[in-house]
Image (tube, rainbow, N blue to C red; front, side, top):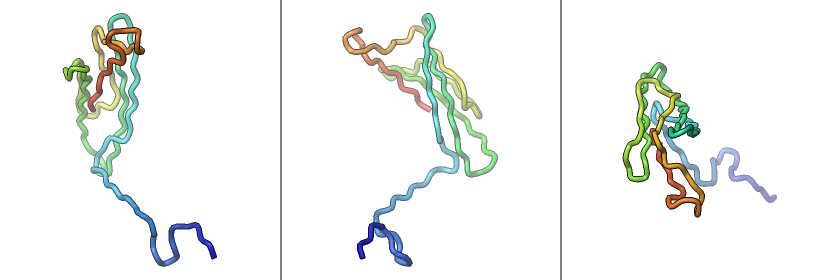
Length: 110
């Protein structure tokens, strides 16, 4: 009899299994959208938090960091899961060949 499954009744699983744990409160989802108007760049964020311990006060901190490592915008506070960061005169992303600084990227730290 030829079998194509990786377990046998009463014998357990016959393959590697990876288990992982998460903290009692952890970041489960994040959505980031960007836009710019005139000379202001806007980063909108929405964060999902999962908690296994009932009513928990969670304080969030958001930092937008430029290519040199400088914080150009930040915000934070208790239960701040939706918001926006603004940058005056942002360095915009350009395809290769259209600018001296193509693909200039900011980093959002949560």
